Image 1 (cartoon, each protein chain N blue to C red):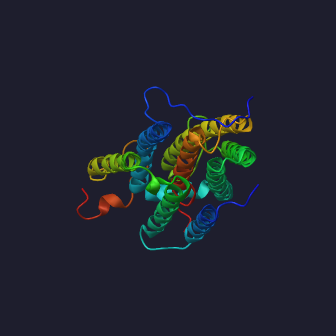
Image 2 (spheres, one colour):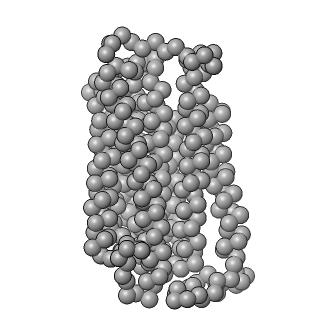
Image 3 (cartoon, helix red, strand yellow):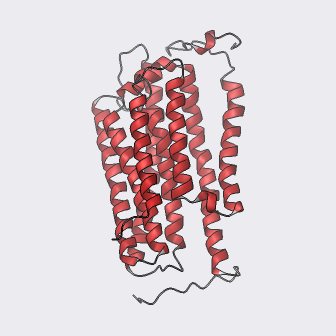
Length: 216
Length: 110
């Protein structure tokens, strides 16, 4: 691998490297706008459930694992911080810091998934998995089952996003280590960061809706 | 590794403080739907911090900001138009689902 600083040559359809970078960033934002609607449909279903069966949702919320959920929120918020720091390092062309910060971000993502997996395991042993082993004696059993259906759908799809994010960040870490980026060219790191922060924002909304329902 | 830039560090600290606040306030009994209103308000504040300082949205080009705004606009359309249907619909007790509680007894909600 060459250590020579990368001088970006824009693709033929762009006038300048800057225009190319802006286009890549714009493309990610358009994609994120579609992602808002992807999660929006499921959040609408949740809103309907909670508005229609508030007591059942409150009881279901008390079954969720508040400690794991809160720690995972802490982990994901921190990973967004390290990702933002990584982009800052890329801007300043510090290759070693960029590589390390991307690695830390990916590891925090893995920690999130590990805790999520442990949580799923606990929910399985507590017979809270709709369609597979759901069993609940409460008068609100049906609502709790619908809540957990949405819970697994929302956190599952969010988890897939986290997995994709970890993959992208790992690729960026390897490329950074090989010297693929410089202070003049780091668009892939920046765009990966946008995706990761979006996944964090989705969790920022999932956290109170899932874990904080019915706590008061 | 050099120290992180101060704005990012402060954003992180603010996000953790808001997390602690939302967790604590969730256990405080409030009237009506105030608990969820407060929780979602804090989520909006956290999301704005991430958008503004981590994603640098407000320093981005007008085109980029328009793309972000479009996402929120269509989300609002999704909730508003669906709400006119679902939240005004009379809900019947069907099968062994528990009878809906609360909303259907409110005046003006048929």
